[in-house]
Length: 384
Image 1: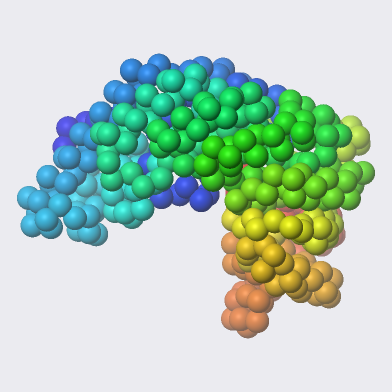
Image 2 (image 1 turned 120 degrees about the vertical axis):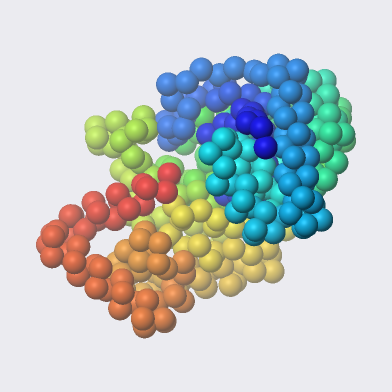
């Protein structure tokens, strides 16, 4: 294979782990949120339609070359372990090219469009790009993108429908909170009313809407408001997916300065679980799928479709809250260390003893509770 490459951005949602990544815009046009450090120090720019088409042509060529190699190896164009192993170890292979190889191997054929707000592009340009992508790579099954609610709310229903018909199946929107007070505090640049309008309009256009909520974003002062107002907004828009992204505050984000000043008091893990419980308990009259699909979340098994699984999700949260304090600490340590995914994992005595031993070692180094908590915060921040 000749050395082929195309442009990709820095992030994608966990649910798009097997997706082909294609960059339409660079960075974030807003980039002022206090809780986000992904694009700080960067400048937003739009890529031209022709640039993006060139990348799609390159991707198509990579696909053709990989399949040709598979045929030469007697694998009939299929991607098995032998074909992948032979390709990925080639020194000339770019990171983007490896993404295409993995995409072919997994076979989901979904595409995620980067970066933070592709709906800011003119509708006619998006339609042209999406049509070209579907035409050049017809095996694509789903196309997804991040979008800002304010941008979506400003698009007409006709524009959004045209974009959907051209091939954009799903959008991910960072609600973060349904509280206008919290949105203002975090400099989100959008109101809860605009979030509701964007969600409703995107669904009316036929798109699947995936919304992100950030437990803990109101701190101790606005914790209850974060839960109740977010439930209000979700009930108003009824998104297809609700995804939990628990707040973490590393030194690299602007919100850390407010913590240092004492004007923002972060929630403890236990308080965050209580906030999540309150929000879910107030979700009524919607059929959204809620998922806790990120390592930053303390409890990964809190997922299900409303209203059917509401009781089970609340029971899962209660199972943690009802643990003795020492067991809650042990679970948190095991979760942040990547061992536990749910409270049920603590029933595995081998795993539990492994975590207990590791916690004993940390306590030997940090005998005070504050030291253990600081260690846990560092473990949690590694997943950002």
